[in-house]
Length: 128
Image (cartoon, one colour):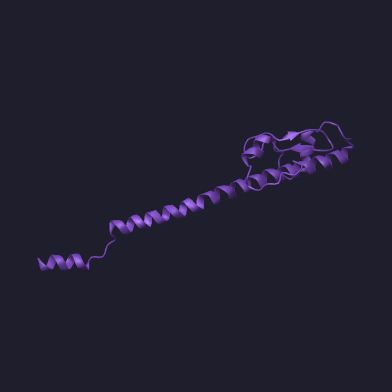
């Protein structure tokens, strides 16, 4: 009998309470961290969408200058796309279409659904 008690005393293990405390702490840390990760991801998406719109707007400006387009002319996205290093993007990361208007003024616009989906993450859409 004495031998069994000695074996039980020598064995070190975690109790159920200790394990539950560790799980609770990990859950608390996850609950604090996840909203920050979600916001950072949305900010990243918004910045990417805004930068794509700016690049396409600059490509339209270059195309309009080199081809002699005047304000109010329709934008030929196929021709303007030749001024981009990447392909012309007709839709953004969220699957909403960019609005392409006419030469001059606001030539490119980010979809209102995209703006509302990414509201509250600190993206300044400016003219787009």
